[in-house]
Image 1 (tube, helix red, strand yellow):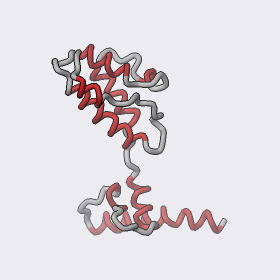
Image 2 (cartoon, rainbow, N blue to C red):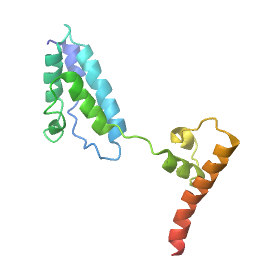
Image 3 (tube, rainbow, N blue to C red):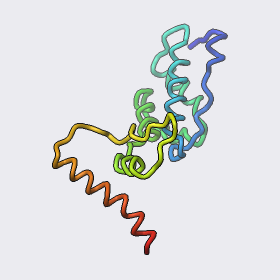
Length: 142
């Protein structure tokens, strides 16, 4: 696997961030885009084994155990994605939407999974959201 001098300058940093860190999902997405751009910039088409070897060199010793047992590059990348990608808690996002003040340029509804629903479903969501929002109030009073 060979790279031009320009390509070596875009070599991504080692992935050192723990998967449970607050900004792990967004930081991993950025690292992954940089890593894929780096691999894609090789002057010759890298084999899966070469991609896996390059992946090993771009992971810290703390992160490497996550993929150590992966038999190939594709499975190693899937393991990293599983560890770094968090599902969005729509219930919590809806709670934030109803209780926080929106700052200029901020979108509070982006993680709320808003969709068309029937009147009955809408009323069920309203009751659920009111209950969830009220839990904090009840806790404060106790």
